[in-house]
Length: 213
Image 1 (spheres, helix red, strand yellow):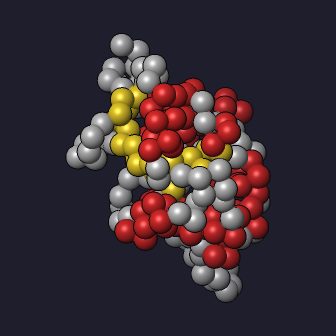
Image 2: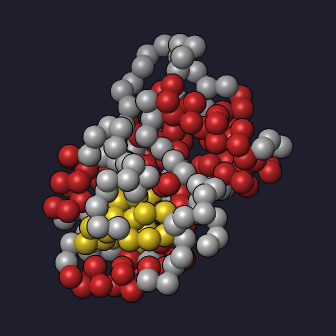
């Protein structure tokens, strides 16, 4: 068994939530031969990644999940065919850590999204990242004046988030900036914890709105 995204030897558990039987069958067919993940029947394991499959992000499966998701709950992967960009901030704030378009939802693509979420990272199409940046006012309150020491970003954090905004993966960011991947992960984790941010996309949005990017 190959190592999984978290450095272990067991596959990442995934709990599938589908809006209809056809969506469920399609997701199971794509994931059936992917050894890096395993479909489970419940979310009792803390490392379980929820996978939501719908035709539209406006469906009750998604809106209900986001409304009920606890702040410290697991991030989810959303596979959808339609998504209103104006609703993207609410999805991110509601715990969606990755978005995959249905027409791109191959087995390897789903594994990549699940892997990112399991690592505490985000994975979204470039057009949605840009839309999120344009709408960050819906995620964070405006703070007049200069940022405090607790909310200010360091030069390295800005460099990391600038690369993240360009779509670089953690390993690519580490290579470009000359740090270890572990250092980049630690910096991102500490940044998100300090500022109360949910994932990388949320952190990029914060940096943009604060004028760092």
